[in-house]
Amino acid sequence: MSASSSSSSSSNPMSREDATLLPSVEDKYGGVRTEMTHPMDPSLFSSLLRASLSNWTLQGKKGVWIKLPKHLIGLAETAVKEGFWFHHAEKDYLMLVYWIPKDVHTLPANASHRVRIGAYVINHYKEVLVVQEKTGRFQGQSFWKFPTGVVNEGEDIHDGSVREVKEGTGVDTEFVQILAFRQTHKAFLEKSDLFFVCMLKPLSLEINAQESEIEAAQENLVQWMPWEEYTKQPFVQNNELLRYMIDICSAKTDGGYEGFTPIRVSAPDQQGNLYYNTRDLHSGH
Amino acid sequence: MSASSSSSSSSNPMSREDATLLPSVEDKYGGVRTEMTHPMDPSLFSSLLRASLSNWTLQGKKGVWIKLPKHLIGLAETAVKEGFWFHHAEKDYLMLVYWIPKDVHTLPANASHRVRIGAYVINHYKEVLVVQEKTGRFQGQSFWKFPTGVVNEGEDIHDGSVREVKEGTGVDTEFVQILAFRQTHKAFLEKSDLFFVCMLKPLSLEINAQESEIEAAQENLVQWMPWEEYTKQPFVQNNELLRYMIDICSAKTDGGYEGFTPIRVSAPDQQGNLYYNTRDLHSGH
Image (cartoon, rainbow over all chains, first blue to last red; front, top):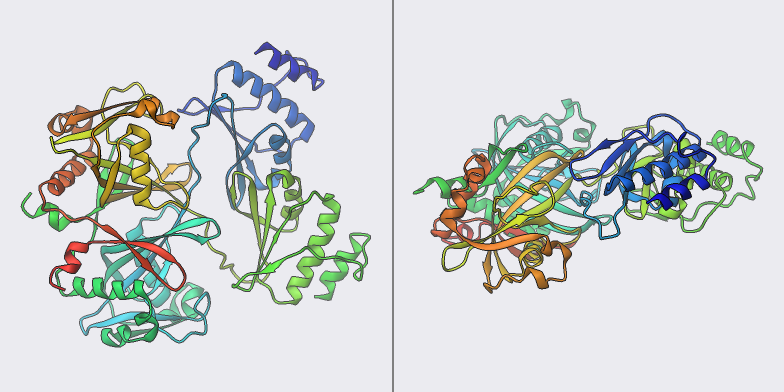
């Protein structure tokens, strides 16, 4: 351990006594986190980082996290040279990590999935709400599909589905249930995709996409389409997934199919929504 | 457009005619992707990037993606100065993006969710497979819980649950069904968490964690515990989420509850597993 300190001292002009350490907070897993906020000369950062690593090693720390805001990305090279790797990045920062012990690290994995919804919205005339995309993967193809969208970070799936339908079509809805979901891989770069098929009840019939505040709505064609007409589209019939979806949605509308309904549930660590088959649980138990 | 080219020329010694462009490939959304692979002087990178951006602008390109491997992270500062921001990062690379048009970008969101599983494994003696963690959040607390784990990137949820049970307990299992799932936010840094409660059928009763190749198994205590004993633990009784889980698992074992079962389904874009209520769909439809 002392060897580590002395090598740190020998490689930079700061003596052990003078060395300031990077400001850090301990996490509950035996690690430390530091967030850089002000510009710093890379050589000074290198000195502080080495001294800090020696100190954390002496303290028996395990994981070390460094958050670098975008405007300080110039410091990343220094951390990489010390053995750090990337944990994840968001729009405005890069998170670097390092594992002090000699064994395999137990740091949490990066987020691996994107969450999307497809909305089954059917009215009392047995018409289903469908859109035709003017941009994106299906642009220029003249078929009608369920409204779809990406659930935002921090957004509940049921809230996200109501929001996406409103933004894409102008129709207000009430969330009913998740009917099914599909998991695929390498859907977007190396990431996986969870696509939740949600049933929503329309609260209005008026299609009002043009007045939506969201630009995307103006790029879609929207209509209420007779269910039979939707299902007869060749692109639907030629798609095994969509044929399953038709069967599931039909079974739901006919009353025989039960999906998962969200219930707000608390746990010691945090609040969340539990989605489950409420009909089966509450009938006879 | 020409102003952009001339400002590029004036800020570096390369003439417009000599300027080489960054190698890039077009994506199907009207954007371009470039991957840096070899070290380059930052000033040269800056010149190439500016010339390339001018060229892509003239071509009407939209999104620009730059993948920087860890060892070339020193080039990130240059890209940030040109207006790039971070899209995501993995262990060994940072992905930067830029949007050429003046309107709001339509680039795909970063992955937002981590996917975890909790495994309900019950044997013919009505004993449930439980573990006591020696590390992690619950270390040192003497309660017994279902095996849990993180689904790997690119891994199917049902495969991940079988793997996690094997690694954590040594018990071989067969996936039965997803009984419920919970979504929570800011579970890990800013990311959200999807926790799938899976029922698995044990194929063996032997607990063999010590011989597992995975170190984590050696850190857990494992046993088959009578179901009633599991449910009576105070930490279970004091946790609303776990009380729901007990009810759902009991209803499943008693035969009245149906969750979602995976079926391999193809779509034009890719293969994936569709999880749905197979009992309700195939009974009477």
